[in-house]
Structure formats: C-alpha cells, structure tokens
Length: 606
Image (cartoon, rainbow, N blue to C red; front, side):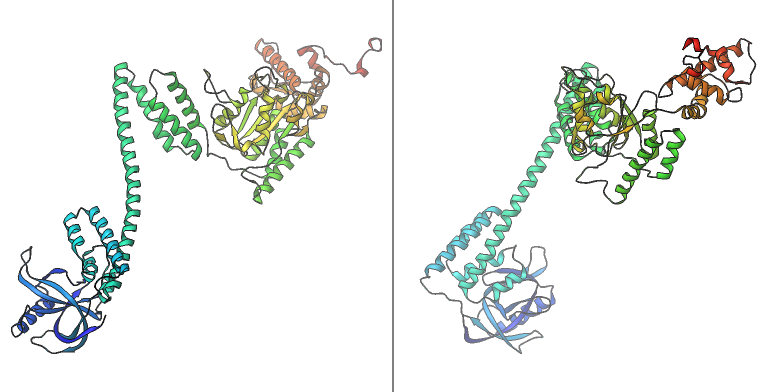
C-alpha cells in the first residue's frame, strides 16, 4: 500500500519493548519522562490545531526504531488505576516515518505520511475465506480463555485491516512478531500473517494441553493410588487391631520399602513389586499371604548383584594345590591349566561373550577317598571364591534341582538357588557331589534338569520353578564328582570334561598320612604331636597291610583307631608318653594286619 501525500509533523513517543497497533487503546504512565514530554508537546501543538493532541507511537527495541509507527491521539489525561498520573492513548493508523523536524518543547519531532490501508470492496473470495478462518481461530482461542464478550466483538469486525490489527492484543505474540505486523502495510498480507501466527499458537497449545493432560492424568492416578493405599492401610490396621496381630501387619507393610531399597535387577524388582501388591490385597487369614512373604524373603536374601573378585594367582594356586594335596600330579596340572585359561580369557575381555561366560565344567571321577571333594574346595580357595557343596546322592525328584512350584504346600527353591543363597555371591564354586548317584522315577529326571544348569549356552537364563524369574548362573564355576563313570547319563557327561583320579601310590599315602591325617587325628584324640609320633615304617605298614584302597579313608580310620588306643592306655596307666609307634607296635595296638604281602606268607598258606 502507498503512503498518502499529506505530510504530518508528530511528536515521537518511544515505547520500550511494547508495540501498539491501530485500534488499540493503551494507558501510559506520565511518570516516565519521555511519555510526559511527548504528551505535553502534543498538547501544546494541539492548541493551534483542531482535534485531539497527536503523538507518534514508535516501539524502541534494543535502542532501534522500525520504519513505521502508529498515529496516536491523547484521549484522556488523569490518573491510572494505581493512582499514578497517566494518559490514555488510542492508535489511529500507520505512519511512514520520515526525516526529523522541529516543534515546540524539547521533544523529538518527525515528519511522516499516513499509510493507505484500504482494501477492495467487495472482498475477493480468497480474502473473505481468510477472514472466516481468522475469526474461527480467534473464537476458538478466546473460548478456551472464557472471553465470551471479546468473541462477540471480534465477530462484529468486518474491516480487514482492523481485524488484523486486533491481534495486537494477543499475549502470546512476541515483540518481534508484533513489529512484523506493524510494518506489514497491506491489510490482506497482515491478516494472513496474523492467521498463521494464531494457527501456530493453537497447534502449540493443543500439544501443550495434551502433554499437560497426560501429566495430570498420571498425577491423578498416583494421587488416587496413594489415597487408596492409605485407606487400605487404615482398614487393614483396624482389622489387625481387632484380631490382635498388629505386629504382623507392620512387618507385612515393610516389604514394599525393602523391595524398593534392595539392589535387584529390574525384572526381579517388577516381579517383587507385583507380589507386594498381591500381599497388600490379600486377607490376613489367607494362606496366600504366607506364601508371598516366604517368596519375598527368598528373593530379598539372594545376592543378585554380589560377586567376589577373582584371584588369578596361578603360582599361588599351584602352591595351594601342592600344600593341600599330595600326589595327583596329573589332576593338579589339569586344574592349574583350567585356572590359567580362565585368567587369560578374563584379561583379554573374553570372560563374557554374548551376555554369558564360557568355560569347561570339570568332572572329577575316581574311587572313594581320593580327595575329589577337597580338590573342589582347593579350586575355590585358589580362585578366592566362595565354595558350596551340593550333595546329589539319591536325588530322584526334578524339583530338587529346579525347585517346587509355589502352588504346592511347603514349596522351596531348588538346590542350585539355595546354594547361591548359601554362598552369598553370584559367582561361587559349586561342587555337584556324587553326580553319578542321581536317579529318576515318576517325579522326573534330575539329570535332565542339570543339563540346563551345566550348559553355558542356557544357564545365563536359568529359571527356577519357585522363583519364576531368570537367574544368571553363567559366572558360577561348576565342578562335579563321581565314582562310576558309566552311571552318568550320556547327555550330562557330554557337557563336562573328565578328570580321572586313579588313586594314590603307597609312597603318596605315607606322605598324606604324615602331613595331613596324623595332625588332624591327633587333635581329635586330644593328643599333642610331642606326645605321640608314628615313624615311617609304621605308616607304611598301615598303608600296605592294614588298609588296601585307592583313597585314604580307611588309612585315616586306622590312624584314628591307633591314637585312641594309645590315649586309652595312657589314661589307664599302661603306657607312658611321649611314645613313638613303630611297625612292631602295630599288632599289639590294633591287631593283626588284614592284607599280608604274598612274600611274607608262610609257604604252606599260599
């Protein structure tokens, strides 16, 4: 739109960070020096001109002025609502700002020309549609704010320019957006811009309202849940007081706090909180409450995130094996290799592959008494891990391994879970003792359940029937012992690496008896090593003629019997201490030998 040729000389009234559009009426504080100077100068000039005093309203943004201002008339001078002196000014129309000029007073005067803001009559079709759209959007926004009187006023506006400038009252428009509306002279373009601004704001408002609604619904749900829980707690408290079991109720209410405070995996925490919800809904007389409490106690007592640090000191491990076990060099060498490989894999970051740990499961197979169980303890000692022994002899029920389902009375977790609980860490050394003695009957095959336990590809998601949550067994070191290799199921044997313990030589038995068995049995017999000693000839004869076995259990029994006899004779006054037992004393103390070498037999007895 072009400016008219009639020049105007107007006093500039700067507005800091405020934009006034034509048609708007704004109150201004006369305590502001610029406002007072402009109003007084306009009043002085109006004495020689017809009409009301005129000023040029120009927004001042960061010290800069736009090229377009608004012609304003001073409608009234008086006091504002707060009692301060003020002036009421109405915007009349746009003015294109020209050069500066002079005028009365110390005010800044400029020349300007009015901007022609007329539109064709009748309105073109697209302009009429634009007017309808703007009014619809403005009505929607005003109704949300409850401004019904303003709705009627907007609907009554027919002038395109006035309708567009009416958006200057919008509080959601920024100062820059209002300046853009001020400098857009074409009424149709200005209305289109105002429509776009209003449409964008409504879209943002819809999103904000949707988010606020979701948040409020969540808050309302939490508040409602909190209120209902408090009411439920109050009702339960009253019932417990009537039944005289208030203390039990207080313990029950503590489970939620314990679950939330415990260091549990996320899936276990969710399952535990669901059980707490069931517990809070269940009746105090219902047996289900006791089952849930037992389950929660079991879950909370398991060491879900507790692990011991491995001590991969291979030299130290070899020293421990040598100190605790005489002989069995092949077996100790294989265990040392096993520990060395685990150390190398751990150092190279191969300890965990695909969320699970790999590694062989050693099966120690040999006759009774050769030290299979104690070897397992030595492995745990060498690795710095906790040791747990799981006795499988005579186990015939699959539930012994996987646990009982909670629907059964007296249900318990399986032996594997109980072993983890007993160890107090998720990476103990678990010895599956007498794995060849596992049987099967109508209740299932425990050996089949052990397949999952010993398979590295499956045991990282082991699921006990009682817990019904996944338990990671991939960091557990499993060892197995057996007496008869043929009694181990083939599928189970396929998951283990055999380490055979064939027994001890006579020389090894003598060393074991001297270094391990004799000190232990002296203590059990209440004797000191300075009081009773066995020379090597006596130990060798005990190993060769009084016992004949692959292990050393009967040898230890013979030593114990011998020491008991010496202690009894001393107490009866028949023998003085200290006393050294020789091979010649054995017959008098514990009787004739059971196994006489063929070379020592009488030819007539052969």
